[in-house]
Amino acid sequence: VVEVETDATAAADDMLATMGEGGTVVNMLSNSSLTHALLTAMKAQSLAGAFPVVSTGVTEDDIDSLGSLLRNQYLAMPYFQAMDSTQNTILLGAMEGFYGSDYQVTANMEAAYSAVDYWAEAAEA
Image 1 (cartoon, rainbow, N blue to C red):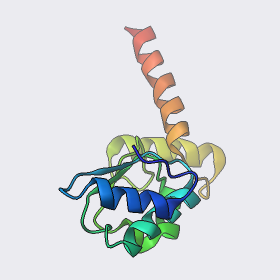
Image 2: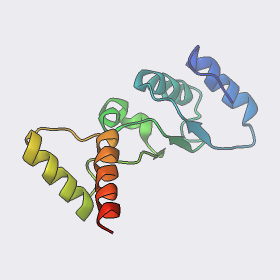
Image 3: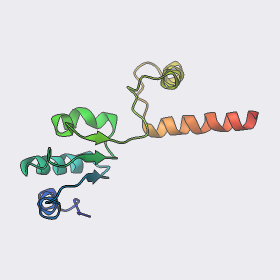
Image 4: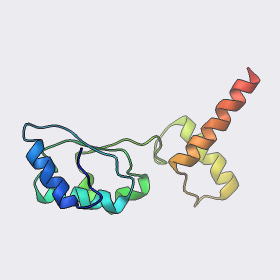
């Protein structure tokens, strides 16, 4: 476990020292500026391609600002608006009908929408 909140460069140094045999970095930072600092420090240490990185707090909005720092990485979030599925098309249509076409749907909104939908299915059963 490496503490990033204080110094991303020191965190990258710790990774280099402790992961000499390889491994996977699990980035659980939910702050995009900390994630940017960590990935930049990893790139400076040539760790960016050496270890797979799984980020759990990177949102769809963060992807553009992080850009090439996310190359060859895994993003694990419960929802991305750009997903192409029937369920997502239904959700986006419902939100657009109510809020307008410029409305951005987030993972938390999708979870709330799905929770109400699941409750309705259970109540009808």
